[in-house]
Amino acid sequence: MPEPRRDELVLAAYKEIAENGFEGLRTREVAGAVGVNVATLHYYFPSKEDLIKAVVGHAMSRFQSTLASEGSAIERLRGHFSGLRRLAREEPQLFATMAELMLRASRDKTLAGIIEKTNEFWHGTLRGLLRAAREDGDLPKTIDPDGMAAVIVATLKGVYLLPGKATGAESVEKALRQLETLLGLRALRSGGPTSAASRPRL
Image 1 (cartoon, rainbow, N blue to C red):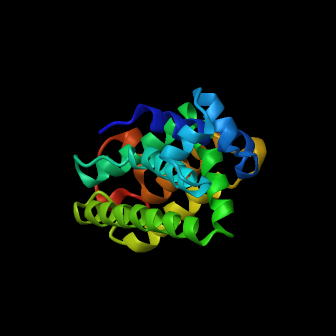
Image 2 (cartoon, rainbow, N blue to C red):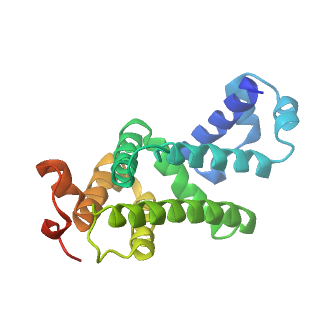
């Protein structure tokens, strides 16, 4: 059952973390942004850690929204990259929040565990798409699905951690272009379908 007030609190905390980092997250400020008192916030989130976990869930769901469940493997892979571009343009605060989550995870075992599970899901999904696209003949046979999935995840996680103005749509675009070139997806997009033999070899 939807709980609008709970969702409002999560979004308010998400915004606070994006703008001020974890050190600037104050439950009183979050409650005030939604127009409720701290007692109401604690009704939904008994501890600050519970609120942070909810923010993690929201941030991860935004990334997972770019992973379609239908279409061919290559279409879903290209759709994922397209979705990441859209998020970078329309929700830049998402990348700032992810940077904060990853930095905090280095000293928070609970948060690290949550992020690790999400990374495993992301890696596993990409690995499956890459393997299927290779089997369909849409990617070079030389591509190692597991290794390439690791490269994609590591590259995009690295973009989150770029300092200050280096983050954003431009950096995401540069990273995705390089990944697409590595996979041969740019040739597919600009020149239409091509045979596996004519695509770049790794």
